[in-house]
Length: 81
Image (cartoon, rainbow, N blue to C red):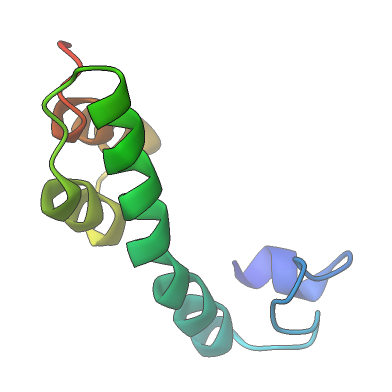
């Protein structure tokens, strides 16, 4: 986030490019529940056993690497890994 905030245009509706990491974190965190709702609805429409709270926990969790987060999201959405 810090690197993105220091360069380039801001995300639509997000903090400006000079915002600090705390502002970016708060902006992103405020949007996670809506994204978890969307992902859970997608999983439901696909006849998967997605769990919104698990999806949200993975999105807010601390993972060693992007692959761990990705695999966690797949599992939370009910996609066999």
